Length: 303
Ligand SMILES: [Zn+2]
Ligand SMILES: [Zn+2]
Image (cartoon, rainbow, N blue to C red):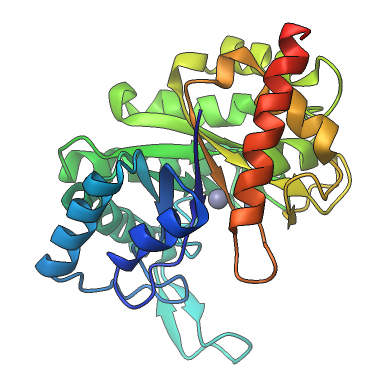
């Protein structure tokens, strides 16, 4: 396992590498976009070069990004009224098309930065049928991958199962991936908090083994590229997306040892997206994760 975290790229994307190194990361996840706006950041060549050089020097890999939360490829392909948050609508926008263009931008900057993949929330059906939404999502991902050749992949992430989000089950993730037609560039990212919240018992004795057996049957373990390791501030099956620090939530230290000791996960990057003491993943969470990993492997081998 390579342990990493989502770190801030404020002040320039190259700053992310040093921030990751300071808390003990071997792998890294960043936002390449400002999470509050569709307008892309104009990453200067010098920043991009600095990011790549510093990552190489620090031996930091893999490097991934998390897609803008505004992206919803499942939204209707139509102009809908929109406005500033909490204010009446003052214009219209085609959220589906904005989402495709944003995914194109994510893949382009991902290629420039040498990222292995873009973690993407699959989307929600927004009142249309499940089949229509899945078809739109798959078409959007296919278009973006067609328009941006290269090695940067799309990693579909499972959701906590809130509302009409798609991706709460492995079957839903497979439905989307099967229709994209880019098998080599569509992988998956599983989030432990989202699994727990959507009713996959990863915390129980033997639980993670059964859950991954199901993932293997429905999707294929060879397509799992990344693990988001987060504890849960919300109960099992609650369908809510609330991350807790490692070992401090309802998955707990025992659940984390079971997950981290699973032999099938050992080759993966493990990315923390925990609150820390308010500023996100910190050295303490990284150290605790490494300790629970060691203990999980010992538990598993019976030593
Ligand atoms: Zn996510
Ligand atoms: Zn989450």
